[in-house]
Length: 87
Image (spheres, rainbow, N blue to C red):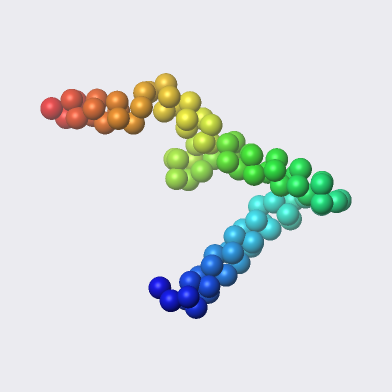
């Protein structure tokens, strides 16, 4: 990939991220200062990464998904169980 195409791709990715961030976070909060913005964005990011359901995880929050996976055992254990069950 050429440098120009790489730069355009990065700019496009950033624009998509910024649009998504505005819809998800900054439109929901009024920032009173830089410190206030940092606190609110950190809280939002923590919620997004741990408490918000993600479609890639079957619409389960990452923390709940991790608990379920831990209760079932490791992915390797699950794969072994499926292989044994398949016979």
